[in-house]
Image (tube, rainbow, N blue to C red; front, side):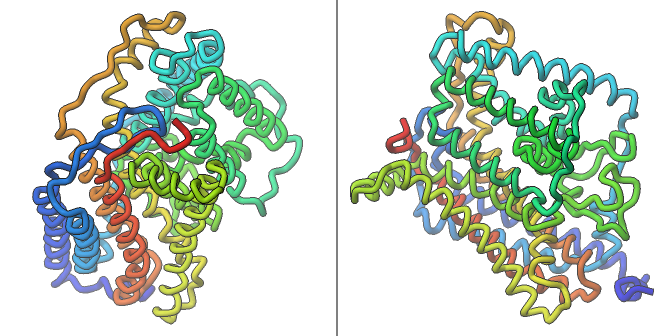
Length: 495
């Protein structure tokens, strides 16, 4: 009998522990709610895609240090309270809960329709980007790619489920072609996807594709050529699983969603609970095979960190303080592009290094046989929930304001709207940004807690293993809350 099974054979206290666990979770949520109630008034609107939205210059009604400290304290308190949930059976019931809601036949029909839709949208984006009016607010390419894809599709992916494998036009286009000329080098892991994702974020930030439809069309066409060539050379499954950055991006976010296909059935789970993957000895009935973990190597850890960092980076460079800092550094004689590149890559390195350091600290303090690499790999999925909260804070209002324009260009794809509609949102919508950020962190705490109980037979080890990672999460929280509290502006030298 395993040690953790022995520790569970206490029928008299099981119900009481479940009740205490539920009470602790409710108390954690209450702490977050109190923080929101006290400090939500006057908070500025969040940042959206670089160069795509008007700036908000609302000021905070309370000192920023108090507002940021309260958010960090709420996360820390929720982590401590989660430590009271020690019943392993209760923890497993939470993230193993499933309900069937669909069959394979519906999947086949939906895949065909989505595949056709993806190819049509790709053709329209390239065509309208080149031939359409070169005004970003009414051009189908810009509106569909950023309002529809960067914002809407991504939110639908972590809110509902990942439809990209069916919608992906490059997978559809390569379906009739012979593929797999060369075996994909396993030693590369998903590092090509990490590099590709960072390149895409850099292009979005610095290449002006958000306000130049023709440049965007060429970028999409170039990306498509690389995707098709990679799929033909290395095989569709290998390429889109390991090297394609958009597929990896949506696959990671899709694990937050409540809906997913497992063993030929569409199954409903609690949000983010699929992030608590089961290693090969525990996995059962999953489409991923004998191991349904999202993160299996350091390249996956880097990708999860990149999801958090790219939103932090775009948030910083679109604030007045960030723009002032960039101008000050450029004023010393450095090229603006080099300054942005150093900030982008250096910040990613700091974020990735901090998470790896948390794994090293946890391994040394626990005196465990598990290596720092194993711990970083195990706890990295919790970052995806944090990133989803960040993304929602950055793009929710942006998507709402541009949703009428998105509907207009889709309703009449071959002609530009003569009177594009952009919604003016009430001030309280921007206050939701705090709820999105804190909500993502609170769920991430639970994911980390559940993961720890998968890793360690000792309750004390399971609880203590989380502390270094929670400390890093608190740092992420404080930084993100500070950024969304700042007034936004057009990035320096990029507007």
